[in-house]
Length: 477
Image (cartoon, rainbow, N blue to C red; front, side, top):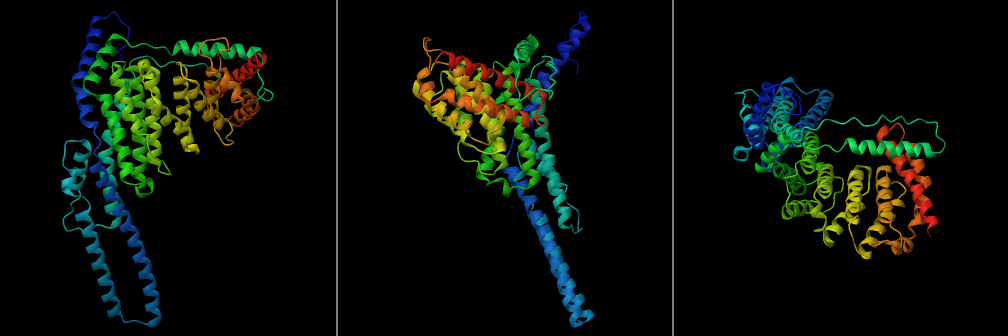
């Protein structure tokens, strides 16, 4: 498809673009809505079918092992050929009966009825599994179970991915600055020339990223919202997370199912965050944005443990909440004490797999603290941030976010309105910054070759700002 932003004076081209936009709104969007439907009952049935097949494979392997042991023992006893043949025939008949039972019970026909793509694909997979009187092995049944799952999941993943692209709008991808992170700097110390370059790069990047939607985007987004597309994507996330909480942890889910669900959550997250950033008419009214926020908050309850699906779902939800806070200004004033507790609780999730959750939670707290707030709230947030700074194994991404937010929180002087300088002194924030500054620089050094050049450059800027912040505060104490 030609980009909607193509610039031309050719009326024919404009007509073609308008025609394609009409196809998107009249054909593509209704098709996407049809497939943006996650059916937990069908997903559970398909996952159970795979698990049953996996058990049958293990049972066959165990039977083969036992048969080898029996044959070895029989050879030692010199058993007659007739006895061996009779015993082997009985074993084969048992295997045939087990395979036939698994084929019959593999899919409950009632669980595959419905209008969603999952149920249709699952039903087609089940109907295609008939093979007359051919006896299928456990491996054959497993392959068919996996094929049925993938056939049901793929349309939903593609629908979410296409929707994510539509919700991103037609703004051109911006090429950011080219970062070259050399190894020649000594102990990550940057001089004033570096500072000027960093500030210039940051300003240029910000100006390039401020893309606005055009009139054609607005028409498309209006249709996207009218058909409740973003809400359906959020419902997909909710359904998967409910399935995870009700259907046990990832250890009880086949690997192929867990991987697909985590990928689906990741794609849904991108789609919903694109909608929050670009589709301004989605959850535009204060009551609408509050409803979406409240629904998301409910999904952040409970422990995560080692459930990879729950972790991926929580990361997706927190990221969507962050996007809403950033782009729905009216939402900030509606955040209450319980919401604050919910966000603070996310900082308690430890482990590398929880880094995105902690980082985005810090960013949300930064947005909330940018608005006027009480000393009690400030103290609670400060305590959580100081705890993160003292965690030896905390990742650089989280530390950088904490340092940036705290510098914003305490940038006001004692003479400025709404300052929290008393909390700053009471909690010994300056001493915490002085202790963290060299540690943060060393951690950045360890990330070379692991993190992207853009990330390294942003962290270097944070380190530079931290040093400047310490110097400023020491001069005003």
